[in-house]
Amino acid sequence: MEDSQLPLVRSASGVHDAWSRLEGHFEKRSLANKLFLRRRFFTTMMDEGDDVLEHINNLKTLAEQLDAFLITALESRADTLTWELVTSRLLHEDMKRKEQGGGAEGTAQGQAFMTSDNNKRRRRPEKKKVGACNYCDKQGHWIAECPSRIQDNNNNQQRSQRANVAREDEDAGDYLFSVGGGSSAKSSIVWLIDSGATQHMTCSKKFMKNYKTFDPVNVHLADDGVVQAIGSGDIVMTMKTPRGIKKGVLTGVWHIPKLSRNLFSVGRFTKDVGPVIFESDGCFAESKNLKWKLGARAGKGLFKLCMTPVMPNEANAASSEDRKGDTTSYLWHLRLGHIGHGGLDAIVKKGYGIGLDMTSVKQWEVCDGCSLGKQTRVSYMKSSSNRAKELLEVIHSDVCGPMQTSTFSGKRYFVTFIDDKSHFCVVYLLRNKSEVAAKFAEFVAFAETQTGKRVKVLRSDNGGEYTSGAMAKFCKDRGIKQNVRAA
Image (cartoon, rainbow, N blue to C red):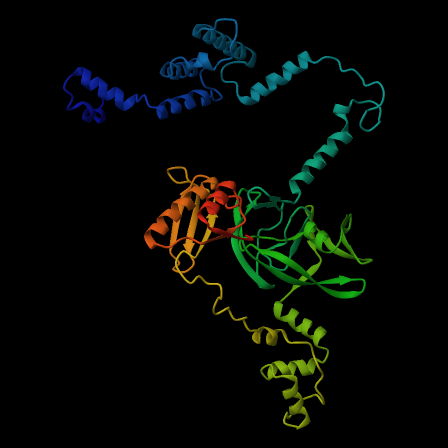
């Protein structure tokens, strides 16, 4: 016994107690220990150059610990297998391989040569192909040996490895995409065309306008990584067309800060604008009898978008010029604190504006900032004419559920009864919606006893739990009027 084991048996009362402690420490009969031994047994492999007999002894030790796991793991056969039979067969095969390979010191390279020699000795004369190949229609070879077929398969595998794949997981609400090759450095200007993506995606929001945040959505990458989309917005893009430089807007672009590439969704563009055609020298878009180059080849099977994003302030300025007509008038409108048409016209006519480079004020469309700044909220209704005058005159009720998590008693719904006058509320837990009528009867008995008043009106939606026969009969018997409104 080693010194490290003495503390385990130092306080033992006898030999049996000491043995029990050692057995409990080193041979625990727990489920975890059995699973660990079983995993070791089935994953133990003999390395190149190891002794077969030593490997068999190791397996036998593990098998004894697992109560003959070797026999139960082997395929069921009519013959009776014994440990001696398996051992003798393995040793015989080991001796046979050593004789053929020139000794136990044979390496993997020697075994490879041995296999090659054996194949040469066993090789049968090849039969020449009679007729044409079923793949390329050429003479002299079989379809399994066809060079054209082998080359095409290799090309297809390479294309599949480089392909850009993007799809939406409708069940989980997640998005999965993969971009092959290229640098992982971020670029907010370069966009790659993805023929399978369901959304436009970008790593930067500096080009976005109308930006809105939403609850994070998981996006799964091809390397099993996960990033999150946290918002969306619109991006103004400039492009070259046969009719000159044009501007377009990518709407609903997802913002994913940890994304290394900007992705242009072909599916989204096709839905919003028009079809996309992929050709040998790039991809092209068609819309309203106009065809222009949408993307150019960027290598490794990728297409680079031939559009340039525009900063929001530049896009707004360009939009203002297009919409306002008289640029100078609108510019001074902004400079003078969004002054109105009349005020700006008075400045020009009376000569108060020294250095103003305009002779008159032309009308422009309503300014976006002025429209937002002068909006007012519609006032809420201060009082209601149909409020209850006394207790229990009107009772409001509604059902909520089913909840994802039930209570310990298995209840997944709850119903509320609220008095319109006092706002006194009672909540009952339900297993099913069919219990609403019984709970309402319980509430009526409780409320009428406590207040001395009678329930007159039950106001609810038109759900089946309120329009059922049991609820209608109870209200009719008690003289309660049902006020059903749309949900």
